[in-house]
Amino acid sequence: MRRLSLVIAAFATLAAATAGTQTLAVEPVSATTSTNAASVDLPVSAGQASYVSLAGPVRDIVVGDPSIADVSVVNDRTLVVLGKRPGVTSLLAFGAGGRALADRQVVVSENGGGGVTVYRGATANNYACAAQCTRLGPGAP
Image (spheres, helix red, strand yellow):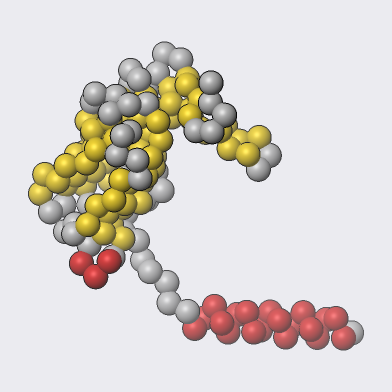
């Protein structure tokens, strides 16, 4: 009986703490390949470009590995992503006040196509795919 009361008390405390927190709303981001939420991959071929439309005016842009992809600003709501070499990197865009406008994983492949993530248990392996898939990241051949 004591365990049950402890579980109920812990649940009530957690529920009250969760109700009191504020969440940051991330607006959807659209691209040429998908118009889903911000967690969607953006496939780009090396030497090719794709665009990302943002829900608000962009202020700051961060590219995780600029040797894989580069970003140009067309206007305050449109970015162009250029694939430089095969790999996976992140693209973050922020608006006024640090509001997140985009959080995308850019997958650059050799000759078109996209990317594949293979999960084996808790391990994820990323591949950039065209006619053949190339493993990316640590331990890649």
